[in-house]
Length: 251
Image (tube, rainbow, N blue to C red; front, side):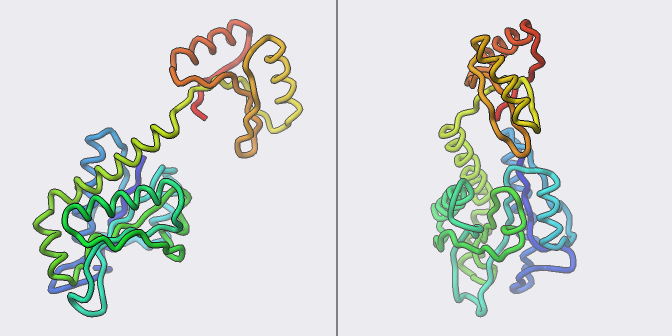
């Protein structure tokens, strides 16, 4: 599940240039990207779908409470003087993990449309990057007070959301290939390590490929790790026949 955030809104127009308000560009682009992602099977939540204002803290809190997988914030950049700068960049808390890879892919995709590639920048002080618990990035889709960027933004109005969505989906596909999903059969979860060990040794004595996984504050006793769901189901049936309570998990 992805959280898409059109920045600014309501009483906060964001950057303004010749009557053009950043909040409007942000909202229309966010919705367009969200529609493409949803058509490709990605569940999308929005911090706003109308012209309303939420503080950066409220946006981060929304994402954390919804327990989304990624947080993507949409902006337009602005410079002190009109036509001083141009280009696209993506801001991240730090240059590591999937968020950095996704940010690079987005910059590259927009660069292919003709935008100057400023690159990926670290901005650990930004609330929506610092306070979100999931990988988060902030896209600056050109300078709103650059005539060149605005012309490109308007001419490529259909291509820009497609390019961003393709970069997001492509990054997720790459990650899934690098980290394949495994199905595991869980037979117990304990706060006390001794209880987990007792069940583990019992399973091992019966010939099951069991192990303990420490997850948060629980010792989870699991059996096997299968890429095919059918294999996990067969193992679960075998365990249930031996009297164990089970469930299939993916972690």
